[in-house]
Length: 387
Image (tube, rainbow, N blue to C red; front, top):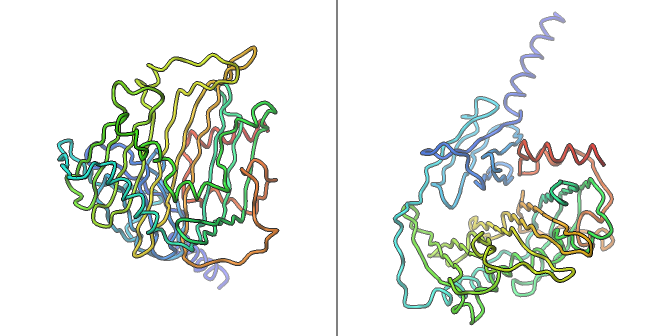
């Protein structure tokens, strides 16, 4: 009898594990078979939000079954049932909805004026008050070597109104590895967590192309999606005779709801190449700059899904040139329009998680919503070992 009961228990355990075990989905382009980065995955049962990494991968654990909603600005969205995830790892192919022959949209208004209207309308549409559970991850590279790392799980309470946001932050867990040298602290370009939401919710990164002089420095162009009738793409690129380190901008927006869905900015190699390096002591010569945010309209709620920022520059010191690179990831793993309660002494007020003592209660990074790539895991493990 004992053997039979043990056998039955083992079978039950295996069935339960198969339903509740870790699942991996890898998203690939149906035509090219390349991994798809930044696919947003919403598990409807738990409301957990995931984002595919550069390997196209998301990882999650789910009790029971659920529908999974998959979306990406460049691909046709689909909804699948977790029952199709028979194996631990499943490849899901998405159909690209961008055609190289997208139409150029001719408008009566200048695109910059349309952009100003989009920004204003988007700001007013944001759901506030709101609670965002956020996972952040940051890599710091000094003179070509990854030397520091931090990540954390936080709750952001957004209050007030869209034009004047108040942010309170509670840090649930965090970890940091590596020691920032004294002469690097001032140049650590990590998240300033106390104003980051204001920057994202007021589209601060678009300010250079909203200025009146931008019409003389940039070319504005609006194009349509071939297979997504709801979205338009606005491309804003520096003119050939424009001076300075000017970014290329790509803004994807919902033309019916008049809200911004995605913002990309980067400095092209050609722009960097034609700018002379600064030689004054303390000068910074940027050689890489990238920024991306993704927003989501879910029923009547409009909020930030994710951001990614990368910057690399060389700083001119007295006797040497110091190379610094920072890569930041930021993802909303759960959204709620409910407020949470907290005590004033629980609010995190420092600039970055580097300033906070490690608080590790669980392996939260494994359920963060952003699966680390093999390369990133190797970097984290190496920094942790050398710490």
